[in-house]
Image (cartoon, rainbow, N blue to C red; front, side, top):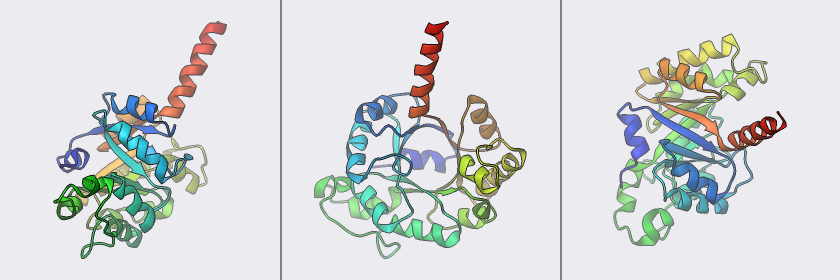
Amino acid sequence: MTNPFKAALAEGRVQLGIWSSLCNPLAAEILAQSAFDWVLFDAEHSPVEIAGLLPLLQAAGNGGAAPIVRPPWNDLVLIKRALDIGARTLLLPFVQNEAEAEAAAAAMRYPPRGRRGVAGSTRAGRYGRDAGYLRCADAEVCTLVQVETREAMARVEAIAAVDGIDGVFIGPADLSASYGLLGQPGAEVVQADIRAAAGKIRAAGKAPGIMASSVDDVRRYLDWGYLFVACGVDVRLLVHGVDALHAELRG
C-alpha cells in the first residue's frame, strides 16, 4: 500500500500537519479527521511508550491525515518497534551528521540494504496475512531526520544527501538554544540559517520540513520553500483555547 505522505513529498506537494502530544486515542482520531495532511505522534517530549503508540495509530486509521511517529531517539530498536506496530513514516530526532543519518536510513530498512530486524507476524504486515509486505516495505517507509543544533546545520547538505533520507526537519526551538538564544527561535541569525537550509535540502533532492509556532511562521516558511510544516501542537491549542475562554468570561 502506497505511503501517501512519502508520495506527496516526492512530488513536491506541500503537506501541512498538526503535532500531537496528548497521548490520547480520542485526540488522535479528532486530529486525523481534520483537514490537515498529517498528524505526528510525539514520543520524544511526551510520556507515551511503544505500547501507547499503538492505539494512537489505530485511532488515526479512522481519518485521512497520514500518521507520523517521532521516537524518543534515533535508535535501531526503537525504530524497529515503531515500524512493526504499523508506523511507516518516522521523524528521528537529534541527527548531527551524515553517519547518524545513514544509521537512521539503515534502521528503517531490511537487509541487505539496512538493519531492520525481520518478524513475520507484526501489525505492519497484517499479522502475517500480507504476503507481499517484506518485499514492499522498504519502498514505502519514509525516513525524516531532525536537524536541531548549530553543528548539525553546518552539515545539513551532507545529511540531506544521504541515500534513504526522504526529508530533513528543522527544529527552531532547539536550534535557537544551540546558538545561546534559548527561547528565541525568531532571532535573526536563527531565521537566516533556517531560510538557507531549505534551499540546501531541496538542492539535495530532499524535502525540507519545519515546526512553526504561528500562522505567520507557516506562511513565511512555505515562502522559503519548506514542504512539510507542523502548524500547531494539540496541547498548546487546548491551553490557548481554555485560557482564551476564561479570559473572555472574565471580561
